[in-house]
Image (cartoon, rainbow, N blue to C red; front, side):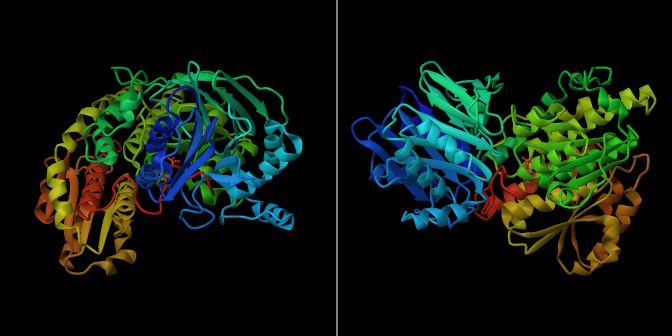
Length: 616
Ligand code: F6R
């Protein structure tokens, strides 16, 4: 949720921290702050409620002496309102020599705070994080060894945390710790970095190291040491970031979301690359050595939000092509009942960030019960990827806008590759039919480009509907999760009431919502699909038209029936019925993004949200 950056080296620390925070702002944008240590001036801190711009203004009005070591934070509020006082960094000790930033939730903070209050410690904020700052500062006063003080305190904390801490008396060292919350090291020449993800430092170095669960980092400009919470040194596992800083910039687009929608042909193409041969056959090298995959008798897909809708689309392919019973579970619900999971269960955990706490906890729970785990993940070195038996990376590149778009179409594509691969492994369908689907998949990037060309028309509709109070979405088969995804995008970006329904469910209740002028966006299946539901959806359109709905359809090119009844149609190229998901979602994404822009809203950073939800 919060974004964290640390730097030690010869560059302007403020430049590095503010550049990193800019790229991490998608994680949270309720407030931002920095601390740096200058040898003469000592520890200096500036922080402000609001987006990063507010901190930059504060630094202009109240400049600080730039330095060569520092930490920075952008906040998504959990404990305490998003105001100046609760903004990070938090200072510890009687002389405020220690500065600390935190991502996560310290669950036992109340008892720790009570203990400190009893000792006469005064708190400035309502946050759980300030407790850690005071505890470390007090421990340091006793031990005079910052690293052991830090270790002693993190061993007392419960919950989820990434902590970064600097102290005026040890101005060459940043200490960091992580439990259930992300942290990555960036390795430079005579300089080193820390970040919540590699975006924090990719402009400076592509050499990165993931920090494992319950590990502590001692970062100096020319050395990096990682130990576990007990103090035993652990080996660094270095990886190379495979994208550069320009991939995480808007590149002339009005918003990251607009850019990321337009990036989808590439995101899908890159996800297919090297996995799908030109004859349409699929072989996933990610399954090599993953022998358990041939023993499984059911699949549970675990995810949240948009990623769960990608899972819903994937379910159709897994059951139809690979013939494996599949269910999709919202991670936060799954873990708190008593699901039936055993050694023959394959869990497919889908997550763009690979750091979503609900998904991680549910996956760990399934693993404990014996399940094998395959992650579909977009972030190299993410916790989910590290904790899974196998990983299929989506190669969507960095997704910065809070609302997921290109990661979604890449997740569905990866899910379909898994389904095809399992179908090949189990000979679940005739080879030629599997190759035919593969051939259709290969056409998808080009077909998404064709759909994108209708962006201008979709924008006109969005502007026209900008004052709508409610928009409904209908779909069947894979069109149902796409309808729910279209509704989610509109809710989160434009703050308009929106709901996605299975079109067959309409007559069981939702049709009562239809009144004169109610906009309804209908995702229409292909008229040529083998189990065509087309005529049933066309009947639904007639039913809602008769009750005054304004019908906007997303339908296959040449669908004359739909054109007769809908007020407006956006066409997608003909494809396999399941692959239509990646095409029909594109106008819905553009619609939500343009409608939010027409209302003057911040498309990339909608209110109350954060990109990666690292708390439960
Ligand atoms: C909505 C959106 C969220 C995420 C969800 C899971 O646009 O982005 O619903 O899909 O929070 O995030 P990841 O995929 O990172 O696990």
